[in-house]
Image 1 (cartoon, rainbow, N blue to C red):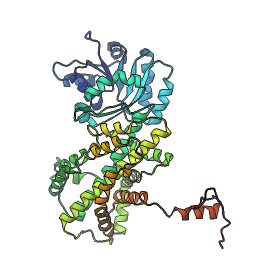
Image 2 (cartoon, rainbow, N blue to C red):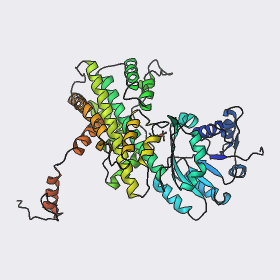
Image 3 (cartoon, protein in one colour):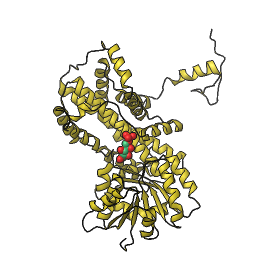
Image 4 (cartoon, rainbow, N blue to C red):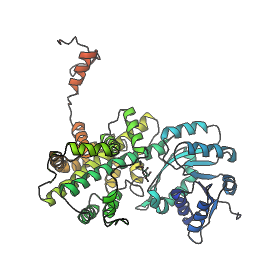
Length: 473
Ligand code: 6PG
């Protein structure tokens, strides 16, 4: 092995690990990667930019011995047991002051457990979210590291160098204490699920409701991506409509089976929000609808059973409906971010993570899957009030939502009258309507609970807890 002292080590040379390491090397860091599969080390070296220093090895020991001390290394291996296995192998090889970063999508409670396990080892351990897919890893992802600030200071120069940049500012920042990095990434993915669900509903209404073909869809998404809806997800959707299928004469999107996969981060977001008592209905709906999509055979039976459902055509001028859809998507996208960010705010307090909300929205402006024009507006909102409990309470956001609300209602009316499923859009509107209602009908629920179970209630006119012997038959 060449006699270099490598600046940074990567464990796991799948496409993400390889690309991130190549990105580091392009920024002048001497990079070394380990993978048991020697062909991956060879691929790493052959993909390096000429003149950069990149080494692939197939034993962990070789990598550890090649690293400059204190050592800085990241693992990008599948979440769960593989992460524990790697930690188990690393501990005897490392020394006090070395830093291990878990850059995968680990569940934050696993990160808390690992922090506890390593607390007397003298090693630093950081849970770090990385978003942007393989392209982001190579050219600049959004990076969400959490945990020990001392460890962050050690790795900050590398992370800053490789991250995406927006207006010259790097899309990386310390996300807070303990497992904050993985918590922030989990919520990022929850929002990602929600926006993808909303886009799919709008696609259905354009495609089947208005009968538009893929070229027309491409044009609409191209226009949207040049306006207030500009975002990474709209941009890739625009291009997806043009992709030709290599196995048929159709567009690829039309040949893909309508069963959505999921690796779990969206579900974790919903589960944790439930535990914290935080309503994030659009995200919950997105998770549920991916589950529902898996029941293809049952859906096929139900489709035959209910085929006399309402007429599918939406008979209003298409330019009018397209504008309504654009506004509805904008409205519901804001609500999705608002729900995710409200969860983050609450979780930060409950789990003492001290998550800097302004920094979260700042680093989501570039590199990550949910980057969008809207994040600039959210950044202004959190800069004005870093303790903002919910984006919907910001006056500028309120104005944006008010402007779009009527079109949101129109879309839901047209869609539901004709039997198109728009659960994500409906959930966003219902949340908005409930959140802005000073007196909800929840008084009746309290009366019922007290009536059948003596669960007590509070009154509007005096403090205290009350119970009534209700007069029922
Ligand atoms: C990202 C993505 C990334 C991954 C998702 C996919 O931010 O780069 O979120 O982490 O593509 O985990 O998740 P599902 O397979 O659950 O859709």
